[in-house]
Length: 336
Image 1: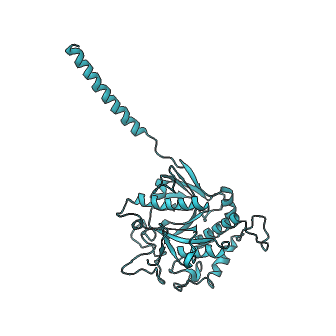
Image 2: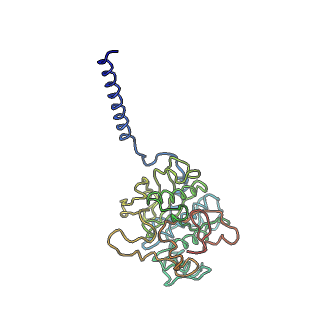
Image 3: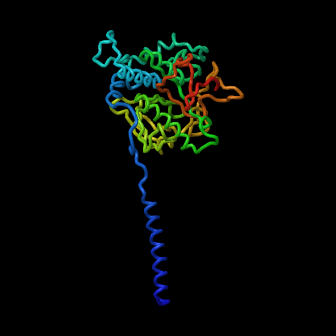
């Protein structure tokens, strides 16, 4: 081979290498991002979900979101267990709550029953009554767990769960990863029970029912799972228009506009300051009574994390009481 031919060969190899690199770069840039709805759905039955909300939503004019979502969770559980309720004149399947007026009925009952074993916060508000251990404007997450457990079929258990990054990490991951981990816990609850999960959003100012996730990996075996989108139902809407599916970036990044407002979803920790200005979210204070009242050693309970209410099987050793909260890893919390 002549020197000229050898030089030409080397030049050809260089050009092919460069072209290959360019093709690879173009492929990387053109690789599709994960679309909402990609992967496997883990969640509830659509028909049963709508039935659970059909006659009881939207929420009333006031802080009834926690009550409305608790009632829908109870109705769904009634459908699962085919609970016979002959004293309620509705068609099968029988459900405990059958009217939006039930929200007011439950709110009034909360004023006179269901006191925590640790007492109650004051002042007593008209939406959560004496089940609150924090003087919330609406219902604190533990009191939502109480309402759900109180009205659900016998031997079905619900508790408040709390995620903080310290429970599962040795060092603080990115905020998006924290949301991904916490949402994976919700995905596991959906897969285990096939029942809606009552999730507190907007830094603690609103409650919705998360009824499904789409994921590229199994949340039961992958932590965190590759979640592409989250499906939730908003009690501010009627069941026919209250279903929303948001891609994971929106779920963790917020600024999601609906006919009912722009939602921060899980872009804020529970109790975070508002995104405008520096005004503290005083509508969702920490507990003021009981073992979850913050101390110098443990300065927070719900704050600095994400929280939800779900079905579980934590019934041993008195833990069935909805007074108790659990970490995202399933450990009973006895301190803040």
